[in-house]
Amino acid sequence: MDVGLLGEIYTFLVESMGMPNLNIHAENINLTPLPNIDYRDKISGAIIGLSVGDVFDNMWEKQKLKETGHITYFSKDGRSTDFSRGTEQTEAVILFAESLIINQCFNPEDLANRFVRNPILTRDKIIKQFAANYGRDKAEWYNSGVASLENSCVFRCMPAALINYGDSVMLRLIASIQTVITHAEETAIAASVVFSIAIAYLLNTPAFSLQSKGDLKVLIDIMSRSIKGAATKVYVTGKNNDVVNLYIMINRVLREWVKEGLPVQQIIEQWGSSSNVLESVPLSLYIFFKSPNDYEKVLKECLDIRGNYAIATMALALSGAYLGLNNIPKTYVNKIESGKEILVLSDRLFELSLKNRNNNPYRRLRNRIEVERSQDELDKLLWLAIKHNKTEEYEVAIKYFEDLVARSPELKKNERVRLHIIESYEGRGNKLLGEEKYEEALRCFKKALVYDLNHPVILCDIAIAYLNTDNLDKAERYVRRAVEIAPEYEIGRRILEGIKNLQRRNR
Image 1 (cartoon, rainbow, N blue to C red):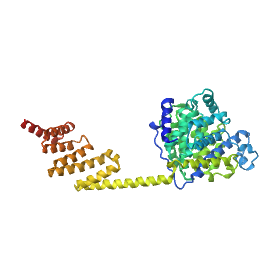
Image 2: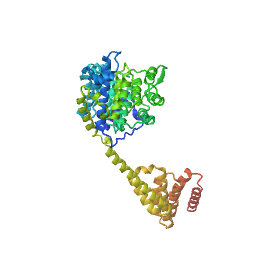
Image 3: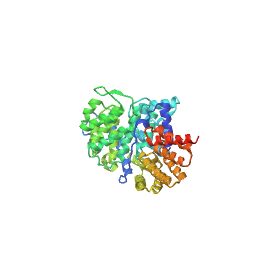
Image 4: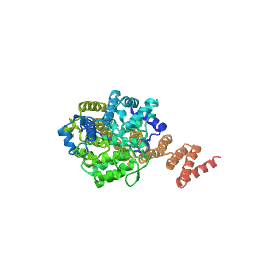
């Protein structure tokens, strides 16, 4: 499914179903793949990272609260293989990835049908309600979602980022539409966009290159811009009953957390750590931001949080996308029961990502070089044209300007360029007037007029040319227009008065 068809579906959902329109205020995000990044390794790292978070949460739920040394317990003691099994979190991501791979594109109806058919997923209360609406009530897939802020739709959308890490337009379309299948709530949709943009950005970021708070603030800026104006609903949340929306939580609150370097527990006490996307998405981002270059520190921070199984899943997915599979300790990777199947799946996603030309760093680099080369050529043509204007070689200048506009028609809208073009045509026209070549002069002046229909000087030039061909009516028409546009233009008034005198004599 190409971006055009997805755009039509998106427009339908906005106009008919009330989905927020990200195209109104949200800014375009430039995701830039780099030739020195192993995207196969990064994609594998993202899915494995998510799975490790899911597995640890599953283990943590089965452990007694008094259990200590939980990371060592999992990675070294290995007393129970049951702890290595993920839950419906990983299953939902796998299901979405399989749908993308089998269809070789995003097919929302196919994904909706897979949600209904999978018994593990229907343990999720939101998907269970969706399945009831879609299956039992025979509603359309796009009309079966639940108005929920629960975060399962957020980490589920990760495969969209894994195949569109160089294409923010396609990424936001897929992230939004896959969310609205089950979560008919604008803040949940915005949360999916934020998370998927973050994953894509981290895929394009070399491992261990996030070294300062300034680096993190760049990502916060990008996430904020991606949902600007998209999540308009506000909610009362936090210990102080702050009135916020997701944009405020990312752009202001998360930014303050990073600036002040607050302890995670202090944030939880102030803002909470529930499955609500307003709490869990900013918190998972912050946990990753605390130690982006240390996978185990991120993991330990996650495991100190109880009650929200998705925070570790999201934080470790971010970490995996950034660090890549090769930088995740193998003791964790090897404990994932379905690890081999997940790695095969990630390879297929990498292959699918290559279908999107925007993900190809070499192609983008070549295109950028071609654009820069083309711009250099245009700049050279413009400089040569202006140079010949200054030496009053207007005929040569006109040739350069005509070549320039033929190559880049949008330059006709550039006011500075238009003034130079008008100067060349007027200069050439005046030379032709001096040579008594009035018809040729008229053609030059009228070409200048195309670039500014209300240019009083050019209008008067045309009037003078018509005067020299004894066409007083047309001369009057053009000069009168010049005087109406610029009453203060004295030359225009004199020419008009002269024409009136000639007309009176000829009566």
